[in-house]
Length: 146
Image (spheres, one colour):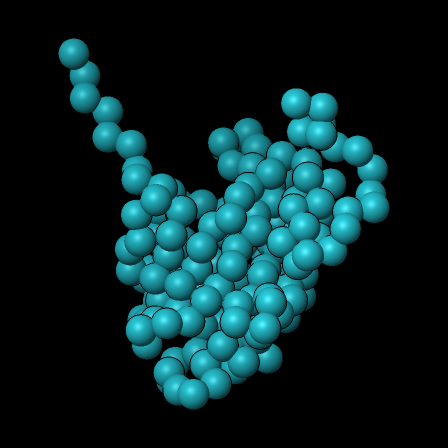
């Protein structure tokens, strides 16, 4: 019998970027906009550096994650980031095109939690709204029926 090792998606691990951890990711990533210096306003500095259209995360084995939108979370204690995977072939390569991440700060580390990935943009948009506490007023999505 073959023993196949699957990644533990609930395991927190260090990212390739210093002072960054990640939770719920299938592989380790670089987070290029992560602040180099950790201080009192680290999360605010991170938020100010993010830019729509910029690379949010990357590694050598996956399409880059490009920032589509980002907002401060409740009580400014987190940052929500919605990304799209670079390249039209990402689905054929086994990657869902849209990803939502939450960034939090604690114990002198920035935690990047993968909140989910989606095949349809409307699914990602709905989840992004709901995570902000905003009522979804868009179209019905596939998962609404199941």
